[in-house]
Amino acid sequence: MPPVIDDSKPIFLQIAELIENGIVDGTMPEESQVPSTNEFAAFHRINPATAAKGVNVLVDSGILYKRRGIGMFVATGARAQLIARRTEEFFEQYVRPLTVEARKLGISAEQLNHMIERGARLAPDAGNDKERSAAL
Image (cartoon, rainbow, N blue to C red; front, side, top):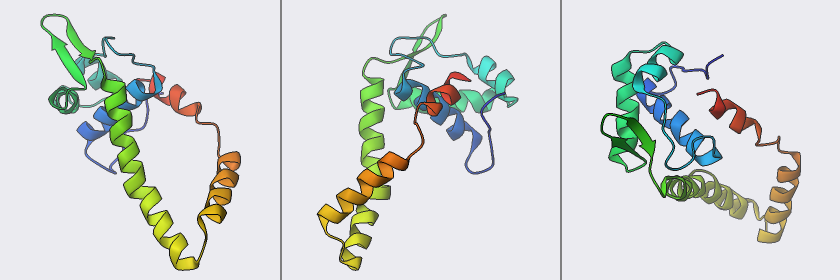
């Protein structure tokens, strides 16, 4: 069953995100060929132009590159680039607001670290993400 494409954001961005997830989790290693836009379109039952738009977002950002007559490939350094960007996004979306709220509540850095460690022990295994990306 294909990963769910939904109405939460534009479909082309969801296609780009699926490819990014595959790169980050290693199911699409650097220098490997990614599925064609027609393959994405058929698999996800979307317009090929929409799939191409998602791929082109990653070409424009240097994550993918085209080998004329062969297809699209994951660029060298793409994984590190994605991890760096996502780490910064994670900080801005989660860590900064968390620390602001902790400060408001008088939670010390030590207490916050203990809470994070406790949360990490309770978190589900992230290995399931690899299975979802492999469904590309």
